[in-house]
Image (cartoon, rainbow, N blue to C red; front, side):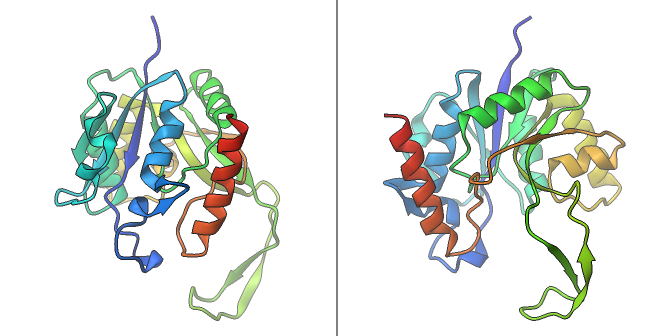
Length: 235
């Protein structure tokens, strides 16, 4: 039986930290919106045949994009939280045994080599896998998250990883785990945390650190730089 691979992209967030006039996924870099670049990266992998995008119900920007008329794209109404948008995306998938790759809308620089590595690892695992990058910097825990905070202590960075996306799981396994986590009020930071809450141990797959998530205004120039390099390598 041929495996089915479907991407889910939560894109209902407002991106308040960008201080822009629109959600960050609709800001333009390298000639397109960030969301378009992100979806292009996913669809450039032949294994991924469908991308489900969760947008807010009153989103005025998505209908203006060519993505809105792409037959490979399914649009669903996202929710107030990321988990709600992911859940809506999963609800649009009929094949419970399919693999779902949940990817941040604002990560437009993911490499095909990393996607291949993730898929290879996940399909040979018991409970999926995520892209991640080993922590390189010295890690400090502070007493608060304010702009200035006293150091509490240094955190041992050995075996610490930055969680990236995509994060890849069987549809039904993620759906059931997400249902359980939401019902029990778990703290959900990413899809892997949902599986962890339910007792599973997904794999960590080393990915490139230039798989940047655009979060702050200063990330835009760096993302555009990485994208320009990536696009040049394709030609």
